[in-house]
Each structure stands twice: as C-alpha cells, then as structure tokens.
Image 1 (cartoon, rainbow, N blue to C red):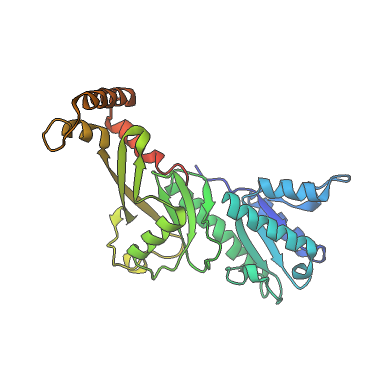
Image 2 (cartoon, rainbow, N blue to C red):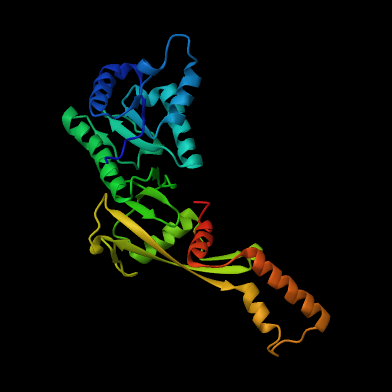
Length: 301
C-alpha cells in the first residue's frame, strides 16, 4: 500500500497567485492534498482562524519565496507559526519554493529549496522528489507516520530517514553523511534525549542501553562514515537499541542473608517481607513484559 502524503499548507503572497494556482493544480492532480486560502477560506471566515486551522491540519508547510512574499507580513507570520509548530509538536516539514531571486529569510537560508526560477517543470520535479522519497521510505517503516527531525538548525542538503521500533517513530533527519556512526549515535541520543541509563525505582529496576546503526540489515561500525557504509541522501537508517537491566529488589533480597552485610534482625525481616511483596505486585518479568518495560523508557520521544 502506498503511503499517503499529509496535507500541504501553501504560504504565498497574493502577487504570486498565478504561479500558486498552477502549482496547486499540479499537486492536486497527483493526489497531494493542499490547504490553499483561495479554496479553503470562504467569505465571512476569520482569516487568522482559518490559517491557524490550516497549519494545525498540515504536515508540510510550503512557502513560495519571491520579492513580494519575503516582504509580506502574512507570509512572515505564517512562517513563524509553522516553525513554532515544528519545534513544539514535531509535526510540520518546511518546503521552501524559490520562484525568483530575492532576500531569503534568515530562518530559511540554510534550507534546501525547490528551484522554479529557470524552469517550472524542473522545480516541480525537485518538489515531487521529496514526497516520492517520503513515500518510498514510509513503506520500509511499515507506513509509520513521518515526523520532521526536531532540530531545525541543521541544513537539509543531505537527509536520511531514521526508524526504531523502540521509540516507534519514523523521522526524516537532516544530517551530514560524512559523519561517523559514533558521531551520529551521540547526536541522535542527545537530540531525542534517549537514555543511556534509566532508574525505575517504582519497579526496583535499573536499565542500561546501548545503540547501533543498521543499514540494509547490516550494522555499521562505530568509526565508519555513513557515506562509506553506502548511505546516500534519502536512505533509511535503522537504530538498534539493546537494553539490559538490574533487578534491584531481587539483588537486595539475595544479599540480605549472605553474610556480606549486617542487619538488625527485626528490621531485616520487615524489609524482606516488603521486598517480596513488591516483587509479587510487580508481576513476572517474562520477555514480553521486559520489552514493554524497556520500551516505556522511550515513551517521551
């Protein structure tokens, strides 16, 4: 089944209506849903309310860059709103479309754009290529919803798709493919705030995690550059996560009477009873339960 493309919000200046009309028609003919004020705002509608609703419903924010649009107050506000949405929720991709030479806003200067300045068809091909890669990559990840990488400071000249069943999210990640696997792992762990270690005192457990990168079902050596492992822009990279745990309650129970520690007998007996009750209440730690508990350490992603 082909993955569906999310709605595209089109931000533009009224001076560029002719170009935008043509672009929207071309996207619609390829079954790419578009939020376009000409079609989605009716007489009497609140303009700001309609725009905010359109942004909240959209997965892609397409901004048409022209001399007129970069001076437009509405376009600037829509861009800022989309950036805030991307940072806060992680739900909107930015797609700059350049139709003529102009002063590109600082927020977008480091972003790759579809270039329509010389030839419309080549620009359209660049734009459709992004969605083509998104669709193909989503199939590899069992059609999981695609999320933008939560770091808009990176250039998207090169990007990869990142997936792990542990955090069960599928990202398009802007990244320099000359980086090593070790550098990439450190960056991913830091950006997504993944744990290296995690104490779960309410369950009497301590977890430790290690990470590896997998491409075409092969692990990538930590010192190897991604490009040397065969990755190019738009490839799907999987992240393997291995978790091991220490059973703090069981360990304490075993050590209570082995002679290595001194306890006051009555308090030790009370502590032993409490530990046994905790372990009963926690339930059996079979493989499926352990995986569930391990995965819960990534529920914030």
